[in-house]
Amino acid sequence: MSILRRVHRPSAWSKMLVPPEMMAAQSKMLYQINKYYGERVQSRKGQVAKTIREVCKVVQDVLKEVEVQEPRFISSLTECNGRYEGLEVISPGEFEVVLYLNQMGVFNFVDDGTLPGCAVLKLSDGRKRSMSLWVEFITASGYLSARKIRSRFQTLVAQACDKCAYRDSVKMIADTTEVKLRIRERYVVQITPAFKCSGVWPRSAAHWPIPHIPWPHPNLVAEVKTEGFDLLSKESVAMQGKQSAMEGDAWVLSFTEAENRLMLGGCRRRCLSILKTLRDRHLDLPGNPVSSYHMKTLLLYECEKHPRELEWDESCLGDRINGILLQLISCLQCRRCPHYFLPNLDLFKGKSPSALENAAKQVWRLTRELLTNTRSLEKL
Image (cartoon, rainbow, N blue to C red):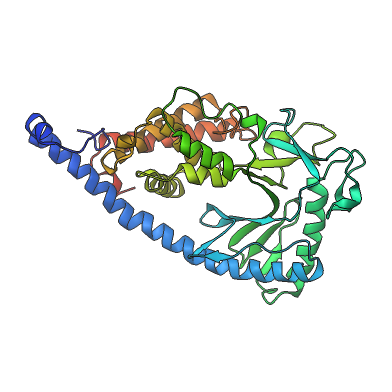
């Protein structure tokens, strides 16, 4: 009996119908998963939390220096109930801090699909350039240039690194238009200027949610759409090789808050934590073909495939993990992983075919181990 088969909570009837050895296998499976979570997953979480506290001290100090030089870049990295707002863990040694900028009001948000996963901010008709806080970053055609803002921010951060209290243990990473810091030679933190867009929903994500699927519930959809999305000033993989005049001006769409809200309820977050741990331990491969974000994306698709809350009960956790790993193998073999909200955007774009092929083999090895060995999690 595989440890990752679907199990339901045993009712009085099922106890009579299910052979005792099957019941035993089911409880063994749950025991193995809970043990893995208690040991491997919690250990990863503890280590990551410790690293976050360490790197945030440094980043906050750098951003304080930036703010002194340029008050328009106000640090929004604050701790709230032990969590840092705007901080995303890419991997245990890599983080992204989103720095929210003020006042976007004089711009119209345009996402007409010409730049997959991106949008531009254009001066509203009749609005004067001088009405914007970011006047010198507006192009002749009236666009607020993401790259120009980032370039200015990069200069400020480089100066701040030389002045801040941690100057001996932090340095800028060169050869990139991104603002990336290397801290204590061990950790990488990308700081990304961004605008929060609340109460609006992008046209390129208008198809969501897919009609006739019971998940997510309309109330949750309304919450997610009110939460809105972010516009980030960063390089977009989708834009590589495109010689578009707007390329440097474009902002990248990000749905982190929306995704996190959809993860609430059932064992979804626990499922993602286990997948991230498996990824770090077994799928941290050359060319980084499989990231935590791929896992998160496929988990959201799994929620659509299994829309009932019952299917996200703790007892179904093994099934959900398997389902997501099998989806991942399929995506790696097809060399395409569509973004959850923007299906025209392929999250494997820019990855080499050989890296994807190698990853498919590794994920298959891992999945086969989980499917055929009831005690596999003890070794993984």
